[in-house]
Length: 123
Image (cartoon, rainbow, N blue to C red):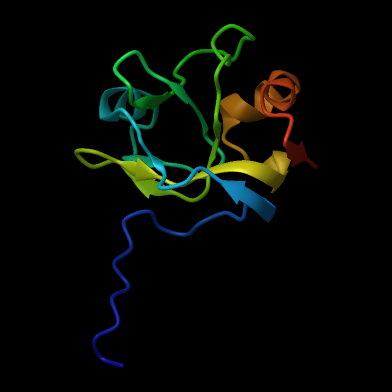
C-alpha cells in the first residue's frame, strides 16, 4: 500500500450527477484557452456546459448563458478535469444532475440550460 498516489490535481470532487444514462462516445477535446480564462484554478469542474467551437473542438462558455450561445450544446462535463495542453473531457448527454452542485455560471442560467439540454433532468 506504499505506492498509492494521493496527489490528485483536481482535489476533492463534488457529486454532480445522480444518474448517467448516456455519454458522448470517446469524449471531446476542450479548448485550453477558453477553459483557462474562465477557471483560473486550473481545473474544469464537473457540470460545466460544453459547446462547439469554430475549429472543430469544443469550448466552455466564459460569458453569461443565453439561448444563442447555448445552441449546439452537447452536454455537461462528467468530472473535474485538470487543464493541461489538450484537455479531454467525458461529456454527459443524458441523466440527472444536481442544480446545487453545478458551477456558478451554469447554476444561474439553469432555465436556459434545461431547454438546451432536454435529456438531462435537473433536480
